[in-house]
Length: 400
Image (cartoon, rainbow, N blue to C red; front, side, top):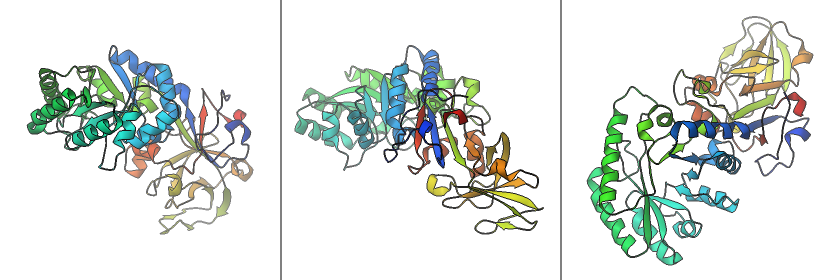
């Protein structure tokens, strides 16, 4: 495979590129071409609904600015973040698309957000803060009212919805804000057989109708996350929020992203730091929780939980020289061990590329299963110590 259009890493501490880093130790390779293809695939499924590309948590660990830009190039028209501080970084990077931030505290910089043309979610208490910030900024705020349809987190309860609509209408009449959207979050769309999604969609429809009856001219109504995008066309409304699917991952147990036409965007790779022969009975790692059963070779991979690798992912797979090996023993802060077996050529392994997950290696879901978690968490937790390298298309040893 050949490297194409290789760019600088998203990690601002690194000034090297994939093509000019022959002795790299670890890297997360983000294929922006796959991000674009994922947006195009979802656009086919949801048209005429718009797509909000969700790039919170630094783009699920992939790099928010680069992923956001790629998503917009491919047809997404909105960007979404949890926090205003995340959204401000996108504005500072020159991204001017409609942008929503939905999770606030009393310390949220509402005035700066309004000045930067960032839409703000409101569940209740935030309304007064946003109105005061709009007055201080001398600009009307754009807000999306959130209704809690059953997830039980943020959002107005149905019992409080009428009062929230009334307060928002008063502020809108004063010219301090404009209600441009109504939205909610689904709780179990990744379990399509459960009836609660139907119940939530009914509740959402009722909340939207009440908002429209209150006189709000809504631009967007949105509730669908990636699982609802893929399985519930009745949840698409005016806009969908594409999170996990943007990065080419499946939200469903036992179903691959490829079955939905999605392409994983991140590959996590390292290099074999050490190889040594040990006898049968050799115990390995903190807690000595693995013992070799025969004379064998142990390989040391220089990545650990400081890099975001789950400490509990014993027996997770890696790919080396085209073959799968398993993590053995407790994963440490900076390193983990794999058992390479009794019959290897050390020269073929020392310094060899180790693919934890991604192109040419295991699926990220296999690491999630080993750690008892979900694929969302595995990619999102990859730490800033791991440089991000942006590529367009395939990558490989020829790109070193």
